[in-house]
Length: 182
Image 1 (cartoon, rainbow, N blue to C red):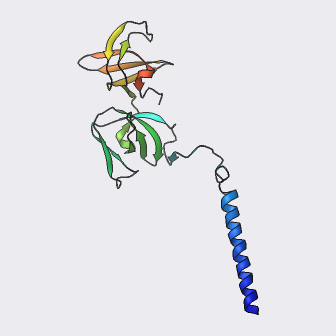
Image 2: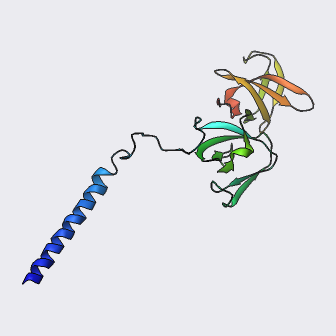
Image 3: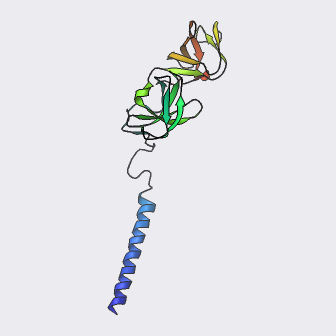
């Protein structure tokens, strides 16, 4: 008889334990990030503390983009243009998760990145002498042209283009990928 009472007591105890677990997992933990008061997802773990997202550029003419934040992760993509702009979307220690103009995403070590501001022309446009559509045209700019961004105003960026000759002028921000302020 005592054996049956003990079994019933154990079953009731297990049932109470299971109910407590269900209550905790369903009501307490999911409540708006129970362990954090921030509603934004964490995009930086021991990172730089700088604003995310932000634009950076490549230091070298050959850079490997990896599938994760470390040398042990396989190479996902090779970037072969020094100065090419990238958008940092997350940080993990000395690694930055970046995305390109064409939405290729991966991880690059900070030593391979520069804060030098560059951009890529996305659509055929004109380089203007002044920040105005009515300004004199200096040059015609074709898509995928790499440019150096000197400064940006509300709708226009002053840029520099290094070819056989140096061209300096203004381009409407809407035609530049990477024109957001660092």
